[in-house]
Length: 613
Image 1 (cartoon, helix red, strand yellow):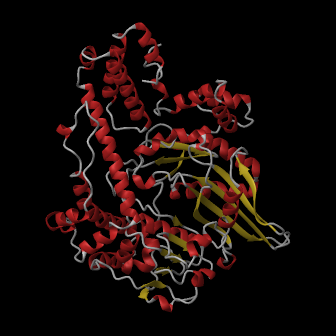
Image 2: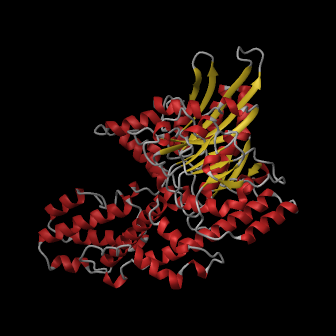
Image 3: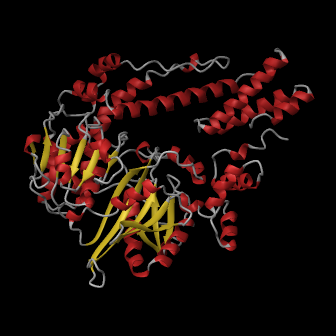
């Protein structure tokens, strides 16, 4: 058996994964893998099953790469909110997850949302959930910007809610939500999908929904950096998912091509961004202070009149520190029925570092002890500007009917940038479109975040050992320790003053940030990347050695030990997606082959069966 014969099982292509899963299902010693496959291909028509296999996929693998399931939530006079339909039917949701979806898919009764309403929620996945087949396709995650990577512990729910008068129903109203459940934080994309399919679904019901799911199952995988054509119910959406290699702050426009573009119905310039200016409009005088609160992971509540406004504002806040990822929990729409309600509203401990979007007046009392509360009114359409809210003392907040405002005693570290305020006010006077205002605001936040993070990036890069200290015959060297005071001393010469005009207590802001969950998450991510880089450099150093010559000078026991270690290194590179050049991996495989072939036949047989290279 060729020791390279199993290389195709690495996470490099959907086709190989699909075939590997099929093989696992047919293998009698692998009942667990078979169970996953049976669940993933629940009662398909044979023709469609064959079609899926021809694409290297099992039925519903294509669907699962984009969505976990689609739910329809209705209102039952006896049961209250209830999940009426889950599609595909084999989709697994625990009772706790179903309960969360039920309550989060309907606006609170006080919201008075007549007509059609769209919003988004996020909820915690039940613990102990089995990893499904499509999770093996997560190699796409590595090329995504950090803020778009899937969080394995959470689901997003994208809602299209309809409430209209209907005298034929006992309650006098038709109330129903179509909900897309996904791991992907592609807010704008899924809201656009719902806008296209939900109105027709309410007219045509389940067969239409089934047809939608079949269309999604035929979509190409959500590969970052590729322009994707996604057909759905007679129309085609053209999208591009960003990559971590894109320049921050730029939108790679989807390019039109000559052929087949006559079918394109919708071209999306972004998959994840919200209308930043519309959300910040009522509070844009305080946008820099809010940026600080989000950066520092401070507990923050957005009190809004409807789930649309609460979810958009929470998502805009999380988005404002991009390209940094917000590492704490955030709930675009949170209700008193949420499974984390007690955990997040208890007064026995300090409020957790989360951002909550709420609409129920009950929260004005329950969350009175929270240090920072944003109360917003109805978001105005583009072109109109609401009266700017003031920063007020928390004791003034008694009910949800309190006047809009930012209720906090927080004192900002940085001086307010008057330039951006003048620029946005001028835009309002000139009736500049909301999209253009959003571009200005997004660029401002990006420059602020980059000015803040560049000194940290520069210092962390200095913790990396020199390349010459990497020896092939020793374990890779460790990163130097992050020393806060040593970092602070670097700020005098290479601090944010090099790139930002904003004055203020930057040192105080950094000290606070270093104790925050966002720093913890950012530094763990950077440390992992740098450790992987060291592992990759160590592999390169091994490749440059004459390993066959080394094995001829050492005993068989030492040579076998070397082969096993090299195989383990290759498996680690494959498993952890180390940043190793393909020719480095190939070179190392050739080294291993040469060493094995120089050993006695009995050892060759054993080593060829051991592990995978």
